[in-house]
Amino acid sequence: MEEISLKAQELFSFGNFTVTNSFFLTLAVCVFLLAFAILLNRKIKIIPGRLQCAAEMGVESLLNLMSSTLGNVEKARKYFPLVATIFIFILSCNWFGLLPGVGSAWIENGGKEIPLFRSPAADLNFTLAFAVISVLVTNIIGMAATGVLNHLGKYFNFKGPIEFFVGILEIVSEIAKIVSLSFRLFGNVFAGEVLLTIVSFLAPYFIPLPFMFLEIFVGMIQALIFSMITLVSISLFTAEGGHH
Image 1 (spheres, rainbow, N blue to C red):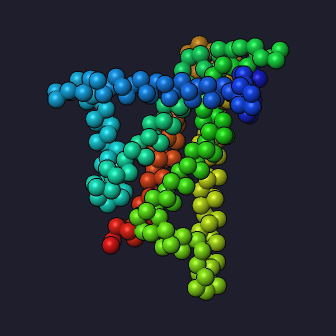
Image 2 (cartoon, helix red, strand yellow):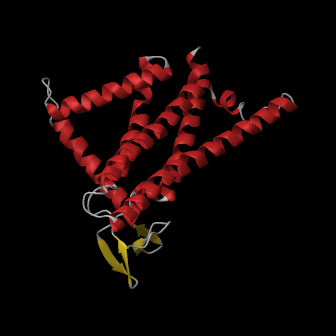
Image 3 (cartoon, helix red, strand yellow):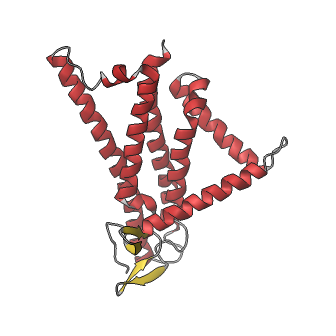
């Protein structure tokens, strides 16, 4: 049975820059999504084909979901690129981590055999980076919508001791959101990898298939949760600006 490592393993390095197996698969996902976007853009027609129909249905479904959360279509279209990018990228990373060869293609490094690919979300650095980006960007959106001083006033309020304490709680809440987003995604994906590794070792062939379908579903749900939490934060931070 292969060794289960909590952290991503180093493949090679360029000076001080280390390329891990999770980062390597992240690059592969980026190349795939870029190639898919170029292909889809070239195939756009007035009478859509199957690929264009599937893409349009996905976009429309996500826009409807965002419209119901944000309250209007204009705001949904404005913030669609951010939310859709988070959802599609995390979903692609989760599903790429389930492809044949991920975890079973090995290379030798330092006298040890390590997997060439590892699911990006099974690396805490990946999930933590996405969580920080989500929290920072949603706060920047809040500043743009309601004003910098008005938005920061939620965190730094010196009108009284109660208001000051509430502001401290808001700061703690944003920090807790980073921790929650990063560890939820990392924990679910890493646990899924460990489960599939153990099941495949104990009972290979067709036995792991139900667990594989379960992980496909979990990967989609985790991507949806991450993007929806980002969307709800945008809705809350821009609510005051939307009334003026």
